[in-house]
Length: 260
Image (cartoon, rainbow, N blue to C red; front, side, top):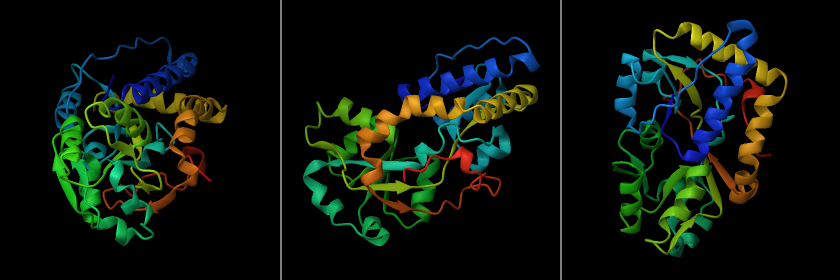
């Protein structure tokens, strides 16, 4: 098991895997669950998962390549909360963002994103001015240097990174008025030889959805963050994601969190 998100998101993911394995144990039997102590960029992680020696399960934002090469379980792990992106900015620029009323106005502000991140191509195709960097720490340095005007992050990343980097960048702030919504669910992915484990996890997750535990685990981890981020008070701008598979279960209401 490997996840490349913040430790907060990791702990939610681990809790969900353990609950799904436990829920499915009556049908599938006992299990052993180990967390790989690895941190790796997305491209390398894909290669490791294809080999299947170090990692056979990972929670990641989906992409067509991952869905084609690995086995996806098409249930958004975090009810799609990571589709909502809040921006980290230099707080002295808050007025620029408070004045934004249309998506076109937002696209006029430059944003930073990682070279290997699945959303980078989506932002670019949507017409944003994208400045690429190599990973989160590098992009924070670029934001501090004024190389771009905002750095969209998932809610947990935005809140934790603002606290982590504000010591070196005193005007680093969480933008207060907007959120982007990009349909880009995080799924569990498994290596090709893991069909039975994939079936087991999907079965376990469906049991958790049916008896309410899937929602309960989500709310336990995310309600405080959603409140802290003020998500329900923000203007939300929707962006189409042409990278999304037609098999994405967008119409299944039980799978998605709605802030209103």
